[in-house]
Image 1 (spheres, rainbow over the protein chains, first blue to last red):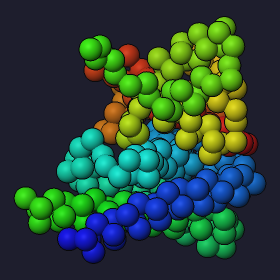
Image 2: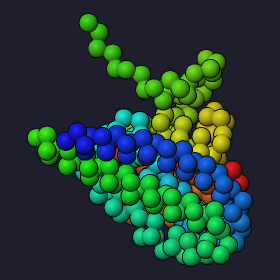
Image 3: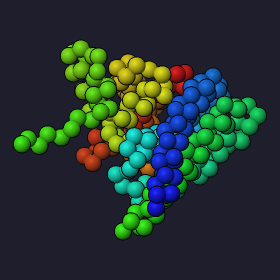
Image 4: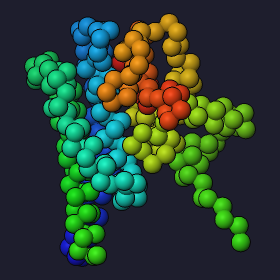
Length: 137
Length: 114
């Protein structure tokens, strides 16, 4: 049990560090975001890839920020279900942008990878926390 | 013994160093936002402003001053399956969701130039 508690504490620290790193990564995409905005058509039927990434960013960062600050979430079961759906690769516009990013937008490619990594880390943290609660019960 | 709820530390952080007039302005702007997956609205807007490199008051003012009337809305009416909609104008965008009373709250604001 102590081992799992230690693991959770390490993961919590790591999530906090990753959030800071992701802020830097986001700021590093500034020039590429300008370029992506210029090159992508502003469809009136759907969100742009940058708007999809922004929405995903705030959802994932919100959960991660709660864990970084307090180690807990208000509703962890709901959060796990939602985080499982929030994979960056579930969104066709982001997948398309990611493919283009390989050759044209390396900072954005790195940002998308890091964002999804943060999502997976938060998921793992919540699942470990649930296991610990089961052991303690 | 009084049962006072503790002040949100993020709200305290937002208000710190501002004048009374600015505090009133900040509190007014915060009512326009939703907390989303953050623990509070204050935690959410602080994180957004920091990521986008704006001082908090300037960030909230920019979001507040976004002119929905002159913008394009997607979807044109109603909301997507995830309850969101975006208003965009030039390089700026405002993503919103309706609250339980159907009043649109800001999820995030940004420009593709920040």
